[in-house]
Image (tube, rainbow, N blue to C red; front, side):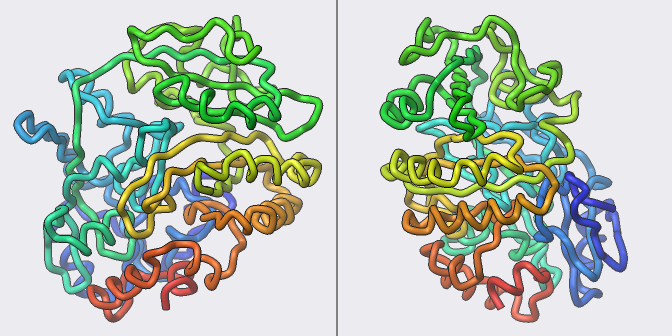
Length: 410
């Protein structure tokens, strides 16, 4: 089995697909090393293991809406697109979604997956509680009143245990439209960053980093609000677009200001299509929003090096949260995302980006391509040592670790 992009061939000695929680508990108790794997939308070996891999897609598929608690409890392996459709049918919604709906609930949360929006936290901020099988095989429900176990465990990188169910906060369903504004030069974007990124419920800036090619602003706006006809000199597109140049827009959700339900506007891509490019690599780096303009200007100095392996780049905003291994721990951030070709020049470009962003105390997305040393990672995440201590307490024998997490935390 390979990961999403095909750049990682998983090395597990055994792959198991349990059908019940008790079966998961038995597997955890009787094996020295276990790693859960979701949809494998990761671009390094964070989801790999040389031991037992657990796939939870054979577990009962549960979507249980609790109107009184304004929450939905879902099976860990369900995809966001599946859950979102059921929620909308029943008049409910999540606060945000990632760029694609094909990713699993638990896997996305564990790595801090996010969408965009100045007031929108990452997907983990919707977590009210989660059910997990711990290293000793015991079953536990963890909620905010559990303190450190909750704030350290929600974005747990797979190290807390085998998450089997997640309870998410929900709200009344809502509608959005999406407009794409063309010809936004990067200098104009930098100079008007806050106004542009605050111009909708969820906003992205798409660029190739090539000097001669202007970027696009993708604005997802709430029904009942009126998007501007012209955004800082940029006019709306008159035909549907893909985020990547020379790609058919067919896999993308409706644009051109057409109003539709939240789950068919917040993701860029439709559930029934292969998202993005399919075989690309991805990296993402986060810096505090207050440094956005300076950080983006700094990247201009290596634009030529970035553009060689680049397929596309997207800049988003993410609101702060309180989760220990979140890149946005107590920090309102921008995410600078890169979609790469699978060529050697990609890794040189990533190193150059990391060097350029180091003065801005960047945090990498730990499920994507990065080259930073563990010593840098430990300094970049303020609660790194607290998380390290928590994991050593609840999993003293490192049952859920692998080479990536061992290099970081052991």
